[in-house]
Image (cartoon, rainbow, N blue to C red; front, side, top):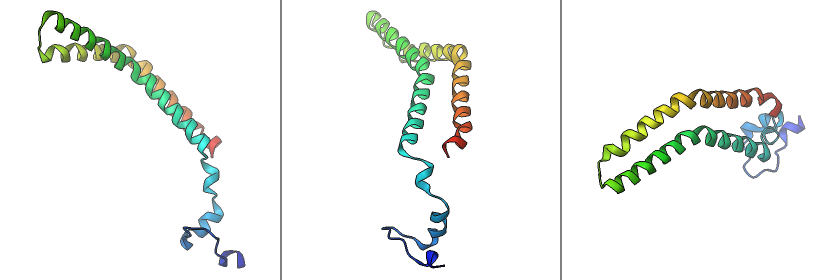
Length: 117
């Protein structure tokens, strides 16, 4: 009983969370190395999934800009429509790979929860 009556020497002590603190050690669940590793995997997967769309839009935009500079045509829809079509073509062709990559990442993350905690 004395264990529950004694107050731990903590700066931001809240008595209502004392039983939870004794039951769960929150610092054991997620350490900084694991958080950095998971965040790194997330950023790498995001970059890989977004890269085909971004690269296609960049190349098409650059080609259209060069075409506009050479012909001196300054039509706004001329830049928008080719990018839209190229993005749609890339989504149709590379979309299944992108979806598989995202599903694999989510599956790996969810199945590794018991290992991490």
